[in-house]
Image 1 (cartoon, rainbow, N blue to C red):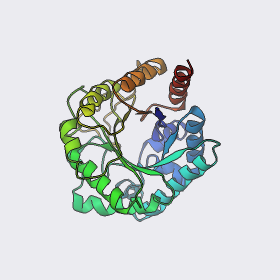
Image 2 (cartoon, helix red, strand yellow):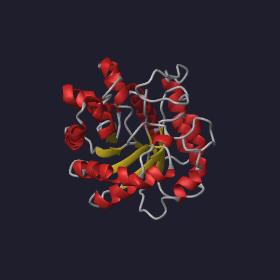
Image 3 (cartoon, helix red, strand yellow):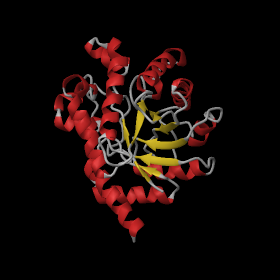
Amino acid sequence: MITILDGGMGGEIQRRQPKAAHGLWSATALLESPELVTQIHGEYIDAGANIITTNTYSTIPSYLAKASIAERSVELTALAAGLARQAADDSDRTIRVAGSLPPLSESYRADLIPNSAESSPIYRNMVEAMTGSVDLFLCETMSSAEEAHCAAAQALAYGRGKPVYVSWSLNEQPGAGLRSLESVTDAHQRLTDLDIAGYLINCTHPEAIHTALKELGSVTDSPMGGYPNRMNAVAEGWTLDNEVETGMRAELSIELYVDAMLGCIEAGASMVGGCCGIGPEYIQALSRHLRTSLNA
């Protein structure tokens, strides 16, 4: 059975609220228009997603500090989890909510990851704020083995027994490993002391995900998955607020995205969806194709 994940939340918010592309990013909607977050969750559910992910990617203190509201991290994390729960409960299907535990500094920047002593209490606070609303935890866009271990350990310790999944972000060059350049095999090995429910790859090119799934499948029998972005390769030194541009891969059409996800399923993925630049129309096309295939 294939589980369909949702697509990117931040990109959809930015498309409808252009100012959210800077500063507080996707947390902007939590402060100004929380109903938009619920609406986007609903669009992904209508598109066929079985799991939706909380809009907590930028409810971390480092992002909120840009508006001098770092102390509101727990409040906004809980709000985001509640909005996702509401959208799931409003559906006539069984929808699971994944609590997103993101990087605590910048995405893709393994060199900027805070140490465990700084990261652990932040992850604990996020987990405790979400645990009443979510069905599972998703440590996503993890750039290094240690970053993933830190987030997952806190989710397991304070998540009231809810399943914990880990999703790494890769170098766009297929086979080059994580953003830290550690291999997928080594990243998996770092987690063997934890009860991880499944492993995914996200926010990188589908070609890299396909290669990584083959490697991952050789070292684990646990569920695997992938949810790519549609961004160009991330330039060295990129941060969310600087002037280094990435842009979107115009050639990654909906049709090619669906083909790429089918390739990932052939490589062993049982969970597929999308990340930055993959909107509801992409998830809908994937869902329709899979339904048609299953009914053939």
